[in-house]
Image (cartoon, rainbow, N blue to C red; front, side, top):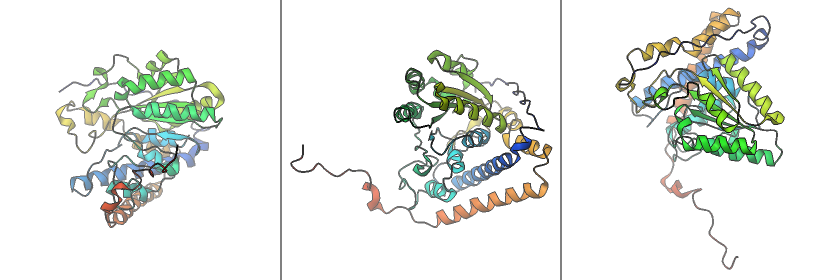
Length: 347
């Protein structure tokens, strides 16, 4: 079992509660709704996986502030290339919860027709590329789309999400290098939850801050407290504005703490120190936002209770609807796989 380094909590950003945040109360309450929905979804789906009702689930518990904070800063014209835990980004951008649930059950309404692993949704409706379990491939894909956006003079950004482990993958280095050379409009979002499955970040990189890796390719890199949705939103909004203005690609490293197993197939007690789970719980972004909203007077007990109830109702309704749909017809196995053959006599 590897030991873990107890990182000191990042300081709470000195927000102007009477100015900036006061004007953001509705946005912050909306962010809280999404974060509560995500936490509710994780709890229910992990339970269903243990019951054998879905095959696999990768929870994003503890990473909600990054998904919500960045998603709320994006434009509808932007393209999203997720890692493993950015399903919430698709939902915030407008992908229906029911369609995502269809994907988790791989039923006949699943856009991927049951061909993708759960938690790897296809969300073309919100410019959200399908996930891949191959580490880092989405990084170079985002650069390709970003360069295409530049060539077409579209005021849009390609956003690539990836974990700390992916910064040691080939596609990270190739992707950042090419993005820098092409000055492609790409925002690289590293969600550093400090574990690449069972490998702690200190054992896979000697760089103390992963954001420093961007400098090797001529990109600005910034470290952000990934447990603070306000800090996340501000950093993403400011970086996106610079990129849209022609400033070139940037990288943001969001530091947070993994609060769950890597996936439903993982047993972290085999490699994490005993105290890690409690240490991570102390840095939970949901109660942190909760306290901030209460300080602002924007989350009275009745509203807090209603948000929790609405999230539970929405998740249960989506489960009931999707679980009642049969699996895809086996005859659909070859649908959308083969293109029409060559035209006889064609060139």
